[in-house]
Amino acid sequence: MKKGLLFSAALILVITMAVMPASSLAKDPIKIGFFAPLTGFAAQTGKDMLNGLKFYLDEQKYMAGDRKIELFIEDTEAKPAVARPAKSRSILGSRYSAAVAARHAGNKIAAAVVE
Image 1 (tube, rainbow, N blue to C red):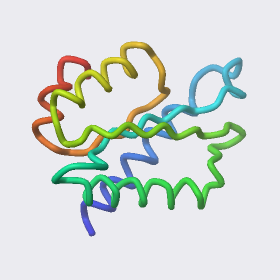
Image 2 (image 1 turned 90 degrees about the horizontal axis):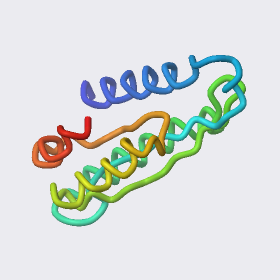
Image 3 (image 1 turned 30 degrees about the vertical axis):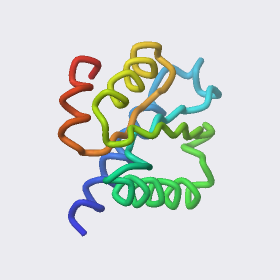
Image 4 (image 1 turned 135 degrees about the horizontal axis):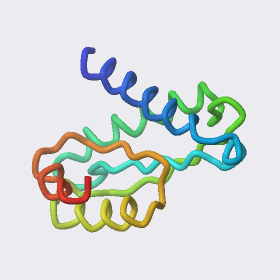
């Protein structure tokens, strides 16, 4: 329960921060990158996180204020060799306004250079 609450609070904070840029960007969509294992040994954890995120976004009608939220999903397979390039492409290329990632230590360590 505590993990779910913490995840929800972090997600709300990320979305709020993404909504705050200058008014000239107010109509641009908020692009959220979701990085988690959706296949492999940790797939159930990633799927549960994704389902929770989608549930929240459905309740908000994929909107934050007057801005549309777009969700992009990346399967890290719980493998650092897959997670790091995915995050590098997305974050360094400024593909997303915000990123939500699973808490698997191997993936976090591999992606630490990017974050």
